[in-house]
Length: 210
Length: 210
Image (cartoon, rainbow over all chains, first blue to last red; front, side):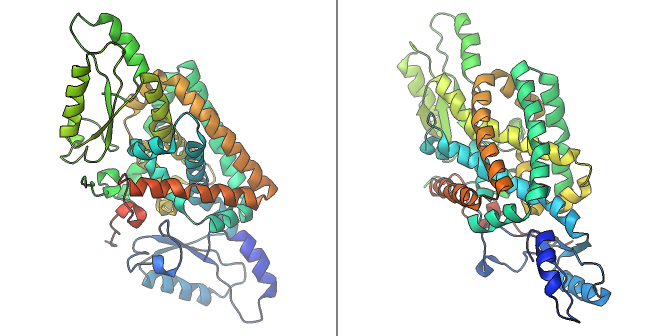
């Protein structure tokens, strides 16, 4: 398992002994915490695992791994390693990079103190800090080994960011309103697919003053 | 109340009748849902409200509003309208813009389908969709009326993004690791200040397969 497939497949495949089947797989599940003690019994329930078998892999080996993930409660999809890496660049790698980026930007401001950022984080900022608390070593390695797909997706992101920036500068409210409207459908789709909670605020328990 | 202060103060102040005190205020609390029916009893508990009284406001009027917010369970800070708008640009306006941006980018990809983005959103993407489901009309107006501070903060964000992009392109793992390490302290500060939950995954309840 791991968040990048093409680099791993290229490195491992030449060294496989005769009769050994290598079926790379990746469960799309987890929290900001790493390591075996961060697991919990329902971690894979209604999540998706992706298998990226290479050409010539024994179909029986793939079927056994599919059965394994399904036994863990996971759904299973099969795709090419290349496509996996592009999909992961948008659903996982870019979000982590941007989360680190926005938290890092806040930490660097001179005009606004860290204490202000922390106190007022319920304005929206705090949602980014969960991903930005993920393991630095793991994420360094993800970006170094999925460089091409990350840079490709990052290019798209930056283009749209500049269009939004221009709309703000020029006072183009129609562009902003249209853009902000069409993103709602994806949130709705995610909730309908059971991939997030419909409870406001991620279902966070409201904290009592102590 | 409202997320931008300087524009409102400039517009309202010349029209205040004699003896009427105008104390702009803004609670840093709320969810992705708008309107009176989105309120709940503990909404302001251990959150912060910011008051931005203008010069010459009766201190008694400010004290009464402070008492009002404190009675709602909120902490209260007082600052200039200008500083308020800069603080909000980093803790709220930029995060919303970037959330809309990243969800919009995903919706526009040809190589990765919307259905894939939705299925695999637990990879990190889904965290951005909460903010991107906020009210489009309100957010259009926020960006149009807090243009200068938003563009200033956006400039800082883009600078750091380009530095990260260059590090990925050049394989500069040290830059990435150092950047990803220092963002953790802010997450820790937010949890210690009771502004978010320490439970993994925002304390989301793990969904059971249906």
